[in-house]
Amino acid sequence: MADIQIAKQSDLDGKANVSHSHNEYASADHNHDDTYQPVGSYADTSHTHAYGDLTSKPTIPSSTNDLSNDSGFITNSYDNTTSGLTATDIQAAIDELKALIDGSGGA
Image (tube, rainbow, N blue to C red):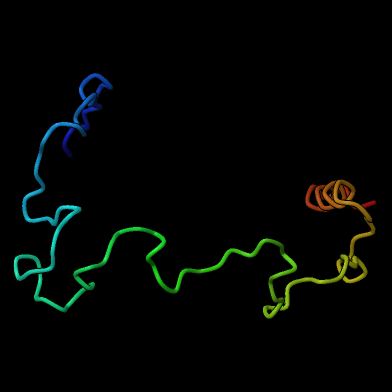
């Protein structure tokens, strides 16, 4: 396996500003002629790369109340009657489970 070399910050300073090319890749201001792909096979030639031009963007709810519970997530408070534990708070439940695992019984 090849050794990995770590670049120093000074090695990278100004590199993005230096004129360089990405052979075989489209530049940011590319057109859609036959050089890159057949005309009409991808985006319209007048497209931009701006986020605002995207379609079918997901919406982010402003509140959890905006979400539906179609997966049946817990909607009620926890009921420990089926757990077999007597604890009524998280720390007591952790302590009770640890005691059961350690074999010293429970609360």
